[in-house]
Length: 210
Image (cartoon, rainbow, N blue to C red; front, side, top):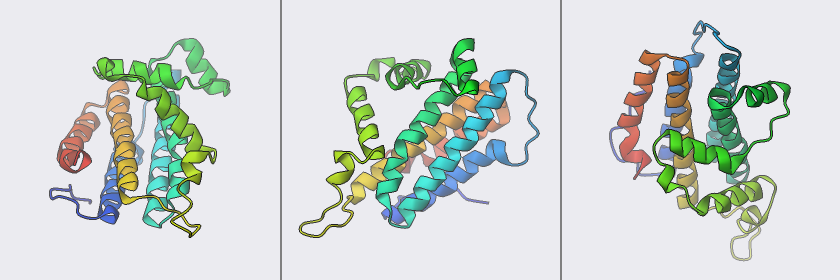
C-alpha cells in the first residue's frame, strides 16, 4: 500500500511519482470492486465521470514521467471538462443531467467554475484570470501558440517545457483529483471514503502547496 509523502519533494520526477501514487489511492476509494447502490440516474453519471477523470489524470502523469509534456498539457482541457461535467451531473438541473446522458451538453467553463468556487466557499477568488485560463486550455489542446512557443530551445526544434511549468501542471491536476474525490464521496454519501480523502489531502498539503 502506498505511504503518504511526509518529506519535501526535491525533484520533478519525485513529484510526478508521488502524484501518481496519490491519484491511484484516491481512485481506489470508489474503484476497488466497490458494490455501488445506484439511487438516482445521476449516480451512474457521477461514477462514470469519476473513472474518466482519474484515467485522464494518470495518463497525463504517465506522459510527464516519460518526457512527453506537450500531450500531457493538451489533456488538461479534457481533464477539466470531465471535472466540470461531473459537477454538473451532481448539481445541475434535470435538463442538464439529461443532456449529459444524451451527449448534447455543451460545457460552460466559466459558469461552472464560478459555481464550483461558490460551492467550496471561494467565490470571491474568481476573477478575470478565469477567461485567460480557458483560452490557454484551448490553445494547449488544439496546438495553439501555447504549444508552439514551447517547441524550440534556442536553435534546436525540440520540446522546451520548463520544470516549473511541469510541476505547476502536476499540482493543478492534483487539485482537480482531490476536488473530484471530496465532492463525489460527499454527493454519494460515502462518509468513510470522504474522510479518507480528507486525510490524504492533509497528508499531502505540504508538497501540494510548496
